[in-house]
Image (cartoon, rainbow, N blue to C red; front, side, top):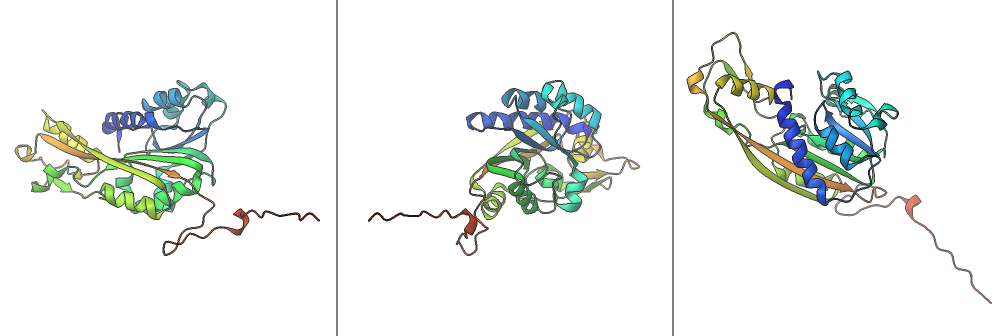
Amino acid sequence: MTQPIKWLQDEIAERMLQKLDIVKLDVRDILLIPDFPGNHHASLAKRFPRARIHSVIEDGSSRFQLWISKTAVNWRSLFSGGAVGSLSHLRDNNKFSISDHSVDLIFSNLLLQDLVDPKLFLRECWRVLREGGLVVFSYLGPDTGKELRALSSSSLQLKNLISPWDMHDLGDALVVERFADPVMDMEYLTLDYQKSELLLSDIEALGLANVNHHLDVEIDDLPHKLTLEIVYGHAWAIGKHLAKSHDSVAFIDVNQIGRKTRTDSH
């Protein structure tokens, strides 16, 4: 995402937080992926006032603005700043810059569609979540920007989403990566435009097209609306002492098996 689309990130973050209303979770550490200077910090601080926020920062975001956004709503951030990483590091290495079993909640807003392999992302979420932790996410589904597919403008180089996974694909991947009780749902948002320039700005910010600004865009060919398919999901990290299953058989670490002794009386 880029600066012109921050309003969408804030809107979807608020909807994600509303979906958390029914979830009971003791949170000490939160990992935001991506983190950006938005209104979501105030909502998270209100929901989890004692939590420390760790950030994977969106490329191009100001770390100073991010720090101001956090500390304005949560004074604990002044004294207990969390770990910080970047999306570019995540994309290059498929790793978070954070230790194993270190967070209780991962909050990922509109990211998965930009990753080459979301399964690697889920694997990292499993690694860093504590036992009983929760991953919550949203991303753009494959019907996003469907109005653009009929365009033939030479000024627009249309692009497919890097990972056009529907909610069933992601739900299956969660199960494969050992997450428990995955819940998936989706909704369509329709954006209406009075100015084609705003549409061009949004589709470029969403990664749906590259705009050749040296050519005049055929304005008459552009739609006046844009459909966004928003997919939501969450799942729990439960039973982390179990090794990865193979052929539907789970293998238990021998160190996790307790031994009960019996003293015979005579």
